[in-house]
Image 1 (cartoon, rainbow, N blue to C red):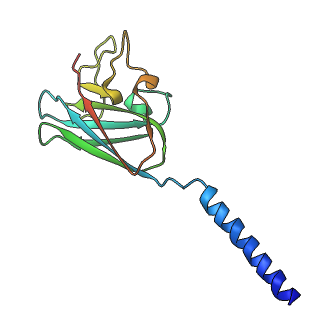
Image 2 (image 1 turned 180 degrees about the vertical axis):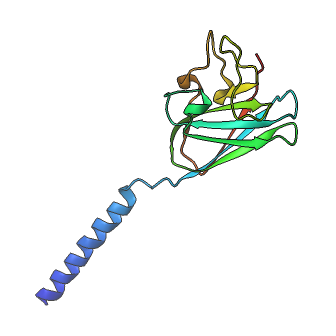
Image 3 (image 1 turned 90 degrees about the vertical axis):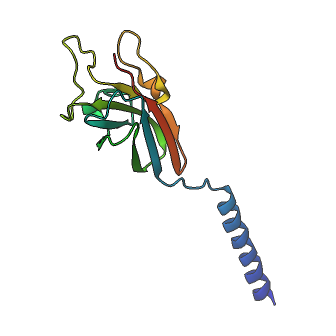
Length: 152
């Protein structure tokens, strides 16, 4: 009888520990997708460059992006989905690569000759937009960001 009581008490204790762990543990947030829609293109020439940044390091220069991809323009808007993205803080920069050279062309002062835009549709003041103004938190399975291009 003592042995059965000991086994029952142990089983109850294990059940309580496991149950409390399951309910107190934070759920794991799986990786997800960030869909980016670009609007306000002045023409359908070339392609759109989509640049994802995980930090302010190099933002918003496309050659410093964590991920960069290009999509040919077929309509009045363009879209791309960054897939399998871990939860975190990000910023996005897009540019209208009208001549399809995969470079954001600038004039001699460094001002873009092609359309540009960043997440939160923020604009720079006496220079490019800041990462802290363009950043957003990503912590869901799917998120859509719409960016309107500006031509300077």
